[in-house]
Image 1: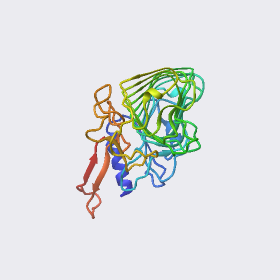
Image 2 (image 1 turned 180 degrees about the vertical axis):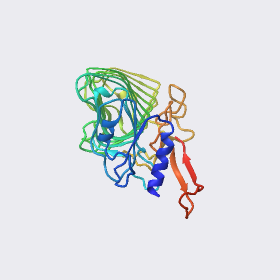
Image 3 (image 1 turned 90 degrees about the vertical axis):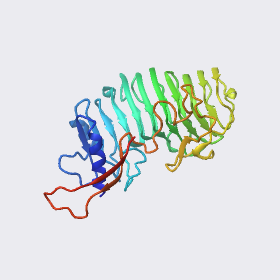
Image 4 (image 1 turned 135 degrees about the horizontal axis):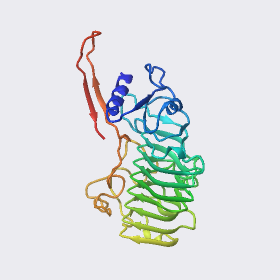
Length: 350
């Protein structure tokens, strides 16, 4: 039944993509299916889609060397056997501009760039990620990082490190930022050259932590900060606008730096989530970070939607998947070879 459900999930998704290569390392993959992502990338042409079957074991390190769409099952598939499509370090080469990375569990680094050159037009969505960092590229533009769970383990220094020489139009939206709760470990986002907007995210932490390590030339809008300090751990932050954010523990006016501006933020107010205690710093998939009816953050964003992850144009998906998720797949108990049989498939659309 496991293989049937997984196959049904990806057959449904494949209907919307032209050229698809399926990758399955479970040991029982049918003929014609790749067992290695590296081999699949080598055989793919620019613009192809790789569907990564969830597995109990990792697919290892991945180097994306050409423009591809790579799709996994999401970070919380909620299926009969809830494996994820797990990889270790994933590097998007500068030759892979235009790529999309969707629905993976990335247990190591997500590197944006591998060598000097320009990297652009990326979509990183619905993944669970330890750490995102630019690496080698000297230009990073048009990057969308949305609907992910970004939760670094103690071995990772920052949640996001964007310090490329030239970077612009980088949007980090509708993500849950969480951590282990270790005071000296979590350093938040580190942006030194600007061009980044943090919009409609929910930041979880403790009172001794900061959501950001350092920001320069950035926009922070429509976010919710749960217990964590919404300012900076290190000095040197400059030219940051905080607009229409909410914090349950702090006043935004207490954030210091050079030319740090504030507009229409909500201080020291409980956001009242559907199911997310204010003591939470590590994201659990049983939690629901959407706002409850009557919340102070309801319809309080600059765009008239909710603050935090369930606002904006791309709300956070609790399943962590952009694909339909199979909830029920029923077949008759006895099927005669060569004859037709009725099947019942129920899916939840995302």
